[in-house]
Image (cartoon, rainbow, N blue to C red; front, side, top):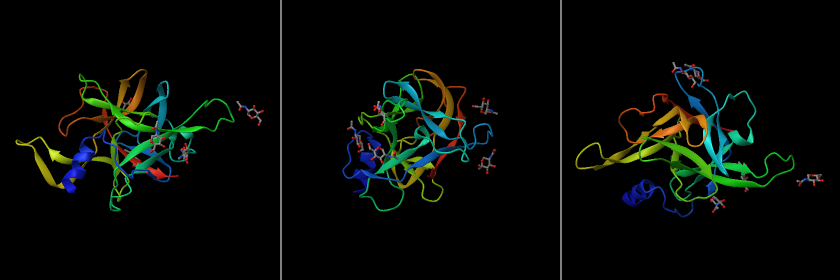
Length: 207
Ligand SMILES: *[C@@H]1O[C@H](CO)[C@@H](O)[C@H](O)[C@H]1NC(C)=O
Ligand SMILES: *[C@@H]1O[C@H](CO)[C@@H](O)[C@H](O)[C@H]1NC(C)=O
Ligand SMILES: *[C@@H]1O[C@H](CO)[C@@H](O)[C@H](O)[C@H]1NC(C)=O
Ligand SMILES: *[C@@H]1O[C@H](CO)[C@@H](O)[C@H](O)[C@H]1NC(C)=O
Ligand SMILES: *[C@@H]1O[C@H](CO)[C@@H](O)[C@H](O)[C@H]1NC(C)=O
């Protein structure tokens, strides 16, 4: 079961049963040694029709939560109650500029990438095609992806104890617009090739 589970998580696109137990809503904040971005909230930002990136905002914990800084985690409810795999969601409000528009469309996060870069853009969209599973550490609420299969050694080996990898970087990126976004660096060694990238952690605070 453990191996099946590890593989299922590894092959991010697989539809997992019983994954629709939504967490309470929360905000995501940056933890960084750079005080300019330390403590700022992530916000969904327009990248295209019903596609949002994960942008750095100027909001801090003392600012009120907004629809675009509110996220939730749709968890795989069958797992034991430790750190749960789940999909990060943001609710897109349709016709957002109309004051009485209330239609909320769950938009799931997935890593998007191109073969010539070593970072992924976490983008939100209502498609649910190849959603990316993320975890939150119970002790510190920091967001990570588990490392189960180590291919920095040959032959590649399954780890007895999962490692919590936090390859989050804040970088100036251009998926469509030039934005300062949160990104994921592929692999577990080295730094992103994008020279603007700064290493950060991301933690959640429930609303
Ligand atoms: C701190 O972050 C800001 C905003 O991303 C950036 O312009 C600045 O260069 C960073 N400072 C350092 C020392 O990395
Ligand atoms: C970052 O923010 C945390 C909590 O808001 C604070 O405890 C820490 O001192 C800050 N660090 C820097 C480098 O600004
Ligand atoms: C918004 O609400 C007002 C008052 O309830 C109503 O007259 C109006 O048609 C609504 N607009 C839309 C776009 O639903
Ligand atoms: C997101 O939208 C769904 C309906 O589409 C709603 O049930 C849910 O409460 C919303 N969650 C948040 C955090 O707004
Ligand atoms: C995506 O998944 C969420 C949560 O399971 C669900 O509410 C939503 O309807 C799905 N969207 C599509 C387009 O299938």
